[in-house]
Image 1 (cartoon, rainbow, N blue to C red):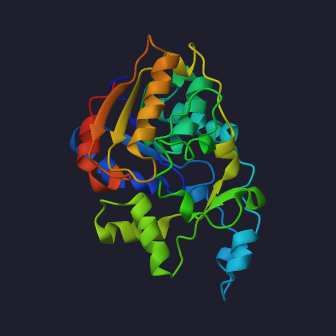
Image 2 (tube, one colour):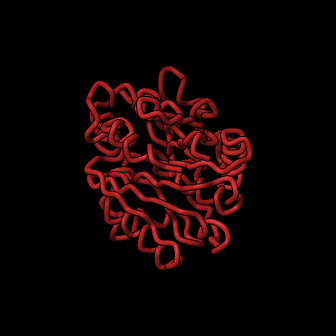
Length: 280
């Protein structure tokens, strides 16, 4: 439906707030956008108790089991499917996703392809069939990422990929900005970092989705490669595209390259909206 809203799904640690500027830019171009929270994120986020205790105990923070441990792709897809159904009134809508939101969209679209008219992966995980997202950062194409060094504690013990966005250590704050907000205005980057949640469920990156020609593989898809990304390096983004096109050669990915870092929705929201405005 041409008048259906574009649904916007964020990535790990963020929330629907991440799309505020893009929504405004879409509105200026006559398109409605609706941002939704991913499971265990945004208004659905939960933190370990140690995150709020004072004095702060780094050892407790690094070892406390996560309250969102065990939330995997099926639970996240359940929520997204409900959000898509509500946004489109049961009719298909275009969906734009970022970073780890890509794995959630992939699972939801495979399960309910009738709810999706077009998928846009903006510097997002677009995992190959049967491949968990956790397999990618260690590949040669992803090994230069600046994200993995942010992790606190042992994910296998906490059940989460935990970061410390509230750390007073300038080196930690610099590392977060370097990973997520390389070309974002410093004041905007600082404000965004202050809104980040600390836990992302490990199960979301260890789960995988079996893709089919009548499910995910049947849907039109676009990929926006953010060439300056330091969390999902551009070679890794291009690997996702090659794998998808090899699996479904009759339904190739439309590719656009954008000279932006990981959070293009904050650094160049007008350009992102321009790319999205003509979606069906």
